[in-house]
Length: 193
Image 1 (spheres, rainbow, N blue to C red):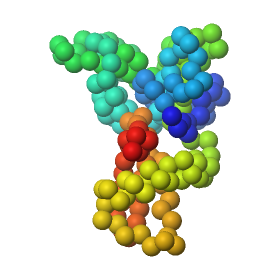
Image 2 (image 1 turned 90 degrees about the vertical axis):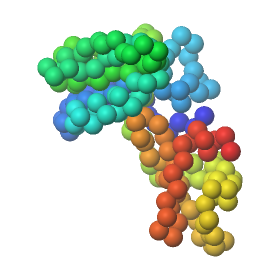
Image 3 (image 1 turned 60 degrees about the vertical axis):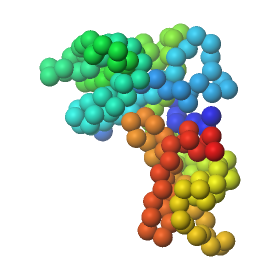
Image 4 (image 1 turned 135 degrees about the horizontal axis):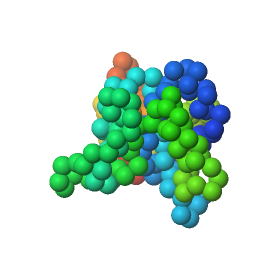
């Protein structure tokens, strides 16, 4: 599985705080379970926000995937648990962390420790140009098949479609543009063509 995201490092915490990206939405991250998966470790993705409302929208979008409890930041900025509707499953690792709260930072630091049960990834991409080049190389044939099957694009031989990664609620999409039109596909779906 292609994974362009960097591992979350403790040095990111003061950097995000300085940039006012105080809210981190956590979720299960299956792309982290690649060939190098460490037995007994859970891979998580943290996506940063400067706006609590945007973080809540992300949280609500991903929370519909795993346990029967929600973890969220209440009106006072505290982590709270709430039971969900019967039969609706939630991602047991979905939560909103507030880096301005000492207890949230402490929990994150514990999660980042080498002996924790977590491998944490950031929604940051190390070198976007290198990722675009790798995606083009790895998925060139799949992109060609996708375009042939799902668009009416007639691309000249001397024209190159450059796939660009886009992250939406922790899910990686590939965006391609041609002649004023845009095609957007989940990377997972592109990998399975």
